[in-house]
Length: 100
Image (cartoon, rainbow, N blue to C red; front, side, top):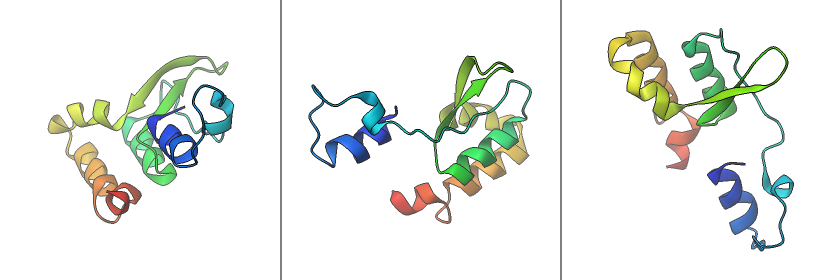
């Protein structure tokens, strides 16, 4: 469950947080990365799926961590390809650029 899930599926619909279950507002169609995936591929997956973070899961599906756009932004100064991909996703042509 993300802050976006809560805003769009709970607050906007007037649901009571005391009685609403997480499964009622969570994103069920999860897209993930694997520990050996390239960061650029995770960035593109986030852009394609219009999300700001994705879980990183091991071979058995166990959660290994979460990678976010903020995590990646901290690393982009050294890597021009990552910076370009991040800029593309964050630009006016992207979902997030249209929303905000």
